Length: 282
Image (tube, rainbow, N blue to C red; front, side):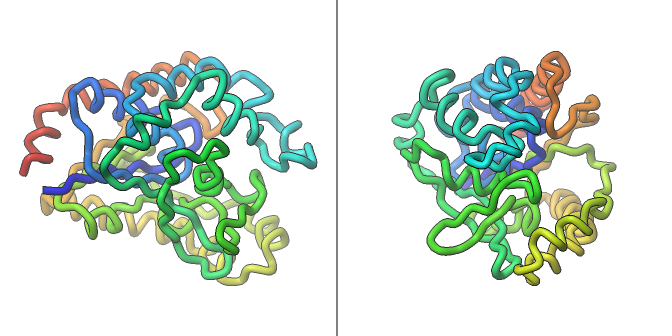
C-alpha cells in the first residue's frame, strides 16, 4: 500500500512541519511519496535525506542573519529576493549545514515540488532533482510574489506553488492509498484576500491567467481546506495541524519562537505516532 506525505508552505512557519517530520523520522516512519509547497518541500527534503533537526539547525543559526533574509537582498541586482538565494540554497546546504545528497538520491520513492505556472495560472508538479546543488526547483516553489524573481524552468515562468495549489492533498491521493497532510496554520484559520493585489497586478500584468488565480487565492484556499477536512472525516487521510503558530511570522527572526514551534510539531507527531502507524498500515 503506497503512502504519501503532504507538506504545506508558509516560509519559516514551516518549521512546525520540520518538527513533525523529525518526529516521523525518530519514529521510523518514511512514506513512499513526498510532495510539498514552498518552504514545506524546501524543508521536506531533509526528511527524505533522513537528517532530523537539520532544518532546526539552519533556522536557529541563520534566521537572524541578514545574508539569509533581509530587505538588502531584495535590492541586490544579482539576487532580487528578500532571501539571499545563493546563501540559502547553495552556501548553507553545500558548505555550512551539509545536505546528504547520497541518502536523498537513494530514496526509492517520488519527491515533488509544487510551482505555479505564470502562463497558465495552474499548478505544475515538478520532480525534485536528486543532485541539484543550486536547488532551482525548490527556489521556484518558494518564490513568493514580489519577494522573489520569476524562475524559468524548461521555458516556463514559475512562482510560489502555494498560489495555485497550497495544500496538494488531492495530488497525493491520486498517487497513494494513505496520505498524511501537515498544515502550518491552525484548523480554524481562514485566509484573507491579499492586501498587496494592486502591486501584484502592476508587477505581473503580462500574466493575466496568473492574476486571475491571485484574485481568487483566498477563496480557493479556504474551500480547499474545507474539502480537506471533509476527506479527513471520511477517513481518506490524516491531518496534523498546529494548535497555534505561536506568533511566528513568515520571516521570523526570533530563534526561541522558532524552536518552540518546531517542538510543537515534533510533539504532535510523537503524541500521535501509534495512530499514524496504524493509519499508514491500513
